[in-house]
Image (cartoon, rainbow, N blue to C red):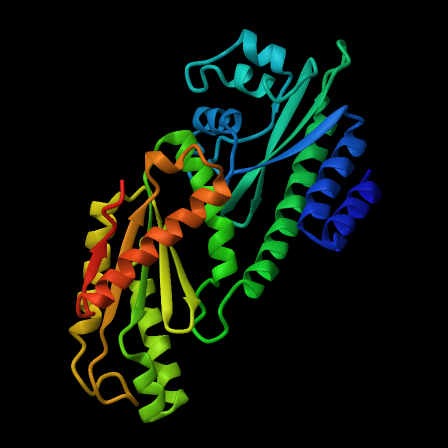
Length: 329
């Protein structure tokens, strides 16, 4: 079994892309345990409602460290008969994902980062998973966590803007699809803040592109400083930036935009070295609203970007160095 585990670990690390990695983890896990099916359930964006229910039962709401009591849960039927006060309804939630009579799941993590769970199930009525099976699943889940984290780090590097270190526009759009889907399912607000540096061309033309690059990096640092842990800070392109704010309505997002705008405007002239003058930004804010929840995710995301962009240009037309919140329904 040790050889099989090592082969599985190498196969995980050798997967050429994300989809292949997920497929390899699931197929190798099912084969190693002689199970009918294996599924990797991520604890990030795009979770379905069933996994949300499992996460709630196990105390896994939100990303973070895997709880100490999250171990392997084996034999769904047995768990259902002994449903305890700590995890009421857990077996029923897992059973919705496991078409077989017996199933077990193990945490997938990398260091302190909890990634999700690896679930296996079998339809053989008399089959029960042994202690050896449990140990194998734990090891496979550990290998899967390491491979997923390595693959995520590599993808993150490709999705970062080389100058500022912020996420790029392509990554923003992917995350907006995930967050818009979650917003529609959970009825939580989702806001987008767009802003750009006022008269940035003058900086490049007067002081040169190295000065412009320095200002871009300093503005990016302000954006990181004024974003919450769950926000996504992005260099949208050129001198334009964005911040995706899950859970924030236009009031909260508008306040965040104003704090950011004011913090940048308060920097004394001369502190934007090597640019000697003050720097200001114009901001636009919009929220994913009810009229966008039934038109398809791609169209809803594009419309949200359009509304934030309209608000941004309203700020520029109004004299710059100000925040405008979209008043569209």
